[in-house]
Image (cartoon, rainbow, N blue to C red):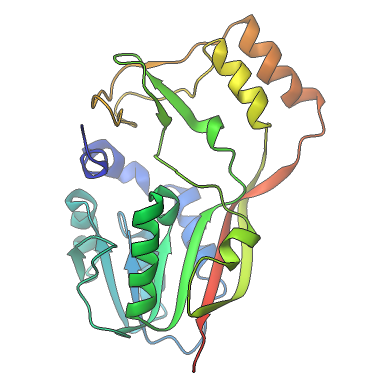
Length: 259
């Protein structure tokens, strides 16, 4: 069974096309509410370093961390110190950084991994933890179906949908002091309609190489078709119902609760 790291080592995920205007905008919005007293920061799950580069413009000491080797090559090219390590075993002493940040990371973690990673974030942080996650995501909308073994999975392996209430109780020893949302406002089709659409074969469309089946490792062939059934179940409600629209991303700033 392939591991998550196998997927994130895929070369195509970290090409220059990753540095899109959307990703740059996300990085900028992440920095909008950065506390002024931050002098050191650890960027966990840094990917190709887009957020690391933005924060390095304002913070004297920035270290980037990711468990995949391929994206770290780009980070090294930016001149930012970067290490390969896992978020559940961060190789730094307690309170090593003013700010620990993880952008688009925790939604990928299973429950046990998430608890362990958040404990590590809190341990390594001296003052703040900054998280960004997809906002009110309907996970089923991004389900793909492997054409080789039939396994159904989230395209980017998200395991949890987040809102303000869930974020507020996420980090022990820290208080949620600020949230802000950004990104394009997207419709949220109800999960039950998406599941009906999938009964007609309406799974997420996936470009070859941009997803990997967690069961068999296939990354080329996925079930995705549009027919009358998927059009009626998914297309019609999308056009005529007053479905809620939400920004794509929510950011949360946590401040250490000093004893």
